[in-house]
Length: 301
Image 1 (cartoon, rainbow, N blue to C red):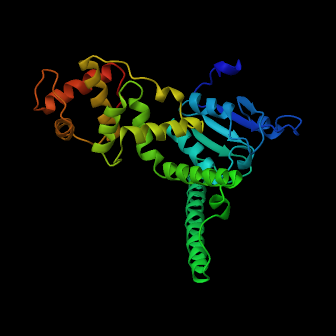
Image 2: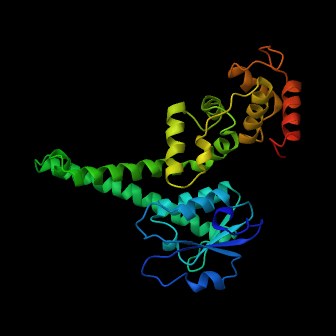
Image 3: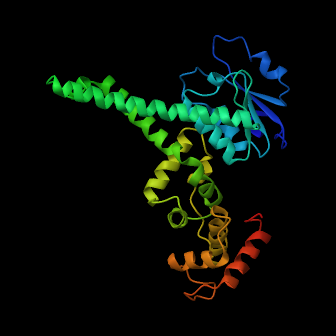
């Protein structure tokens, strides 16, 4: 990768990721022995939330490449974090493999293991929520006041712990449907405004979104190192024709099976005017824009 002094990896290459703690002597030799074309080292503890090398890797990895680790605990802090990393890789068309765990997203068996892991994580969250509710009900029966005593007393440590728990729950909620809407955002931002992106998402099966909620959600993913910070950049003031090209390309990419008539109906519902300023869209106008977008490299088929 350019920022590490290494050449940019070519499609199909295997990129090793090794988190090296201060106690370790160096990179686990198994990563290098696995035939990786490059090995990136992260010098951080397991509890450290800042993973600049991992964040850069997720931004720069290319379709067809595979991220390889020795063990899952060398990559992720939790199951939720692991699933988020893998979803970020899938959004880029890349793969993941752990040498000591049955997780390999290039094989049906590995994908099955990943699905089981996700189901276990979801079950664990549900069980924790149920145990919490049961505990609160039992406490009320005994006449105890609910809530955290530390929070009621204003204890800073308790407040920090509660805030961290809320942040983890919020992130888990974001990750639950990440693959449904994030690719659309990545295709449209920052070339399109937040308002246009929200309008595309809300006309599909991904809403409801508001501009502020979507911006906050993407910023959270950027802070976690899961998506490129460029998504938060300011959208340029586009010419009308250019804006329509990107908007129609984004609608088509978000739902490839959508017909020309359906796209035309969506544009009318969004109160978008045609290139000539009209309010009625025809399938031929949509096709013209899609053909132009493909020639400009905005859309692939």
